[in-house]
Structure formats: structure tokens, C-alpha cells
View 1 (cartoon, rainbow, N blue to C red):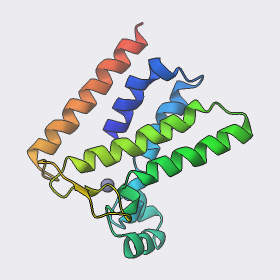
View 2 (cartoon, rainbow, N blue to C red):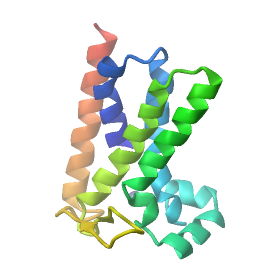
View 3 (cartoon, rainbow, N blue to C red):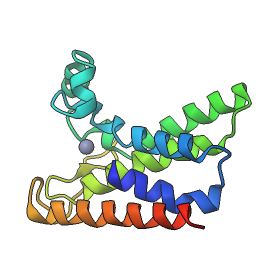
Length: 155
Ligand SMILES: [Zn+2]
């Protein structure tokens, strides 16, 4: 969520959505969605038994953590935005949020199957989940978000 917010904030000046709060909220929410394949996650706990079904069918960090899922979400929100006359820019918020989740998971030792279910191609990093390093990344992202927000607030 912190990385989704961070990337959303970085993209605000580029994409200039009419409603920045909606844009950032979508990015943060979309950052939760890939873990719908885990009944133990924030979102997964709220959508039991769906998360159990997704875990059984796709596996944790499978399709929902592949590059295909954010692209599919982007296309879906783009379609909704097109028909509802809302700004297509909000589809980018969803794309940014979902990609942020997959990127952050990809730098962990557990990694992600980036091309699931087409290929078993796996991307993994060096950060251990629930470690001091993970905490350091979280603190860095959170402080960066606060600095950017303060900068935006006073500009
Ligand atoms: Zn995940």
C-alpha cells in the first residue's frame, strides 16, 4: 500500500487527474487486490471463501501476481471509464497500484511468477518478509510519501 501510494504520488504531476484523492485511493486499493489469492491477506480475509478458491485454482503469487492481472484490471477500468465518461486517467491508478504490489513482492525472496499461468518464469529478490530490511523499505516509502504530501500541500 505504501509503495502504491508512493508511485501514485510520483505519477500525479504526470497524469494530472481531476480528483487526486480518488486517484490515490484507487492506487492504494489496487495495491491490495493481488493478495486476493491469499485468505490470510487484508483483502483475502474479507472475501472468504473467494480467496480460498483463488488460492486453490491459481496458487498464491500465481496469476494474480503476474503481469497479466494488472493489464487486465487496467483494460477493465479503462472500459468502465470510457462508458461512464470518467477520466481514463483513473485506469492508470489501478495499473500503478497493482504493479506496485507485484514489484514489491518480486523483490522478496519468495518472489512472484510473473508470467503465470503461461510460464513458470519467476522473479525474486533478496528481501525477507517480516524482516528488518522489509521494515526499512516500508519506513523509507512512508517517509517519502509524507515528504511528497507535505511538498504538495505547501506548493
Ligand atoms: Zn502479494
